[in-house]
Image (cartoon, rainbow, N blue to C red; front, side):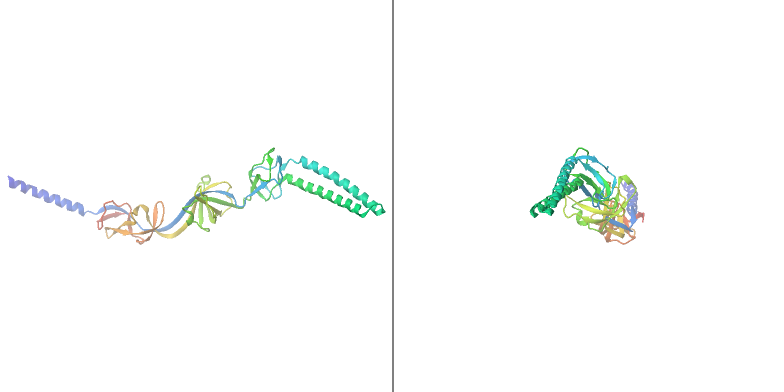
Length: 332
């Protein structure tokens, strides 16, 4: 009875060993993808807004209350056009007083010159009368010229971007009443994190989008970087010249500044790279290859060294995968 049990168990052990050998001899099913050629772009993300490239602030030249505002925001104006009028009653009264003094001085001048011609006045008296008349006329002319300062005029032809003038408010030379800009000369001012600013240089291309115009991509180019950053925001301002000037001023944009573009890059899925290495299928077996990566995107990563085009990269290999493991690859 004892020998019979050994005899019966021996076939079962041999069968189990054969099944184990068959199981481990089976290729491991994995998913692969070939290394492909495609464009890779390294970008710096920023937000910005559209503004006039050469905005002009308009203020009064004298201190006086505002009597009339003649334009609204968005109005088209031409250089020299009145934008607002200031209260000028006091100045007009001063002009009337000076005009009366000019008239009196002119009468005295004519009278003294005539008396001098007849020999009843000295040359000094004549000169004083002439000088007094000239001074009166100059004072009146200056007062009339100052009257024009009570009209606030546009310094350029363009659009009223902002209006801060209201009837009854006090205008001063230090207070901006209007901001004007030429809609044909716009720029995008973007805020770039100080960690990214070393990668941004003038001349780089920029792709811009806005929630207001979904699906539309605006193009531009970096033309200026402010030399001083904002220590509070830890950021720098970058100026972008859009390719088309039809962007409405004040529009908020999201910018992708292309700091590097490789149109023919070797690309693989980003998740295939682990600790600077990737698993590949070579001759039906697993092999781990060290790679040098370049531009990294959300889905793909550029391979600069270590792989050739068409190589089969394992997309999501098992964590316990070992070298020379037999593979059954789908996707390559």
